[in-house]
Image (cartoon, rainbow, N blue to C red; front, side):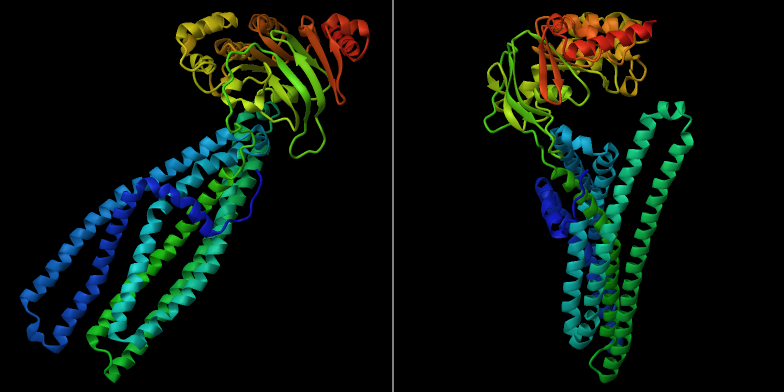
Length: 592
């Protein structure tokens, strides 16, 4: 996955704000509740000041009625505070979770649009970390960020106004400490962002390593390499610990700098306040209010300091979210793309050239070929000659870099991807079955099909009998990636999936090369049934399976060097004849 430079906080906030659009009412009321809780804290010092002033100036005026009225006022504020706090803790947090859910939906949607080239470079473990743990951090951030900044802003402004009315010089000396706190905050915020980003990246690396090890557990055990895997995991785990320890050291340094600033502010109030009291410019009641307001102000600053860690975690999560969202979807429907209607199956390659975006070497160049509807084409040649690449260009898994591909005379770039790919069925060497039942996996070929249709497709694929022998028939759980089934069984289920889809164009990518002879024979029979009446492209590993193809294309690094039927190419005595002779000789030796 390509690394990007650290994004500015302002840019991240700008990208994140639109997610609040659907929850404007909730945010507004949440901020109103935050304001109510702030008022409660700000009024208490004024109540204490009023009581202290009466006690020192005219003790007789400190009546029971006055005390009860102050107590009643504060009780009312506390009830409002409790109700407001409940709303913030419940509805506010739920709103944060909804924002996280919306972002996860957008992220997954974008991941579905990205092309094969993105996934050839990305680690699934890293993507999983971004779509799960990184976005968990956003929930608390989304909820608390508006609240904390509003509360801090109101407290600072109101405290400054009230204290300035009592004694402006002392207030200015007290607030002179804040710029230093802001400088420290900016310095440590940058450090925290970098550390949190590295830490989250390392979580993705651990996920990727665990996924790689567990999916390859059979290989691990077959080579008795459990200790190697444990050592690799221990190294990644240790690196994560180092990064986490570094983040705690940065946070500790930040917290210490703020505690020093707290102490400095209190020293200013105590020393300068004492001098102002001696001069008669500050009363004892005002001095008490100063101390209480300083406590309110410092508590608010402490909350901001504590929130800074959460803020940076949230910013890191949003940044890693944006990095995937900014990855371009290279294959997109062109403006005005139309649906591909009924398909006869003619496929034309007009001066087609292709190279991968990170490689200037051409895989295909100046390819001009025509396939008639219902024609069976076999592609053979050495590894790296472009057989699979050629077939991947037809459903637009990659886009041609030169020329164009036509289906029934229509440029595939002028068609919607969905309608194009709905007309093409693929059976590959590496079968992927989803975690679920046999029925669910076959249904993937045509969501919404009836069970009778599924059974008919399975019968055509030669899969029905073995499915019925499974413990729960079509409702049997196949395990992770179909681990409970044999290679031949998985392949026949994948063929049933394509039978159910019933596409007019079929691509068979070495569909039998990984199977034993018996399974190959069964699967080959299924493929022959599947191929009838369709335009078929077969990438062949076992050359004996393509003797019946209408046309065989022999691909080399120079393009299509030979073309013709099996008999014609054998008679010609060229590249194909040599490949076939080598294959049949090797097979004879194996049998012997």
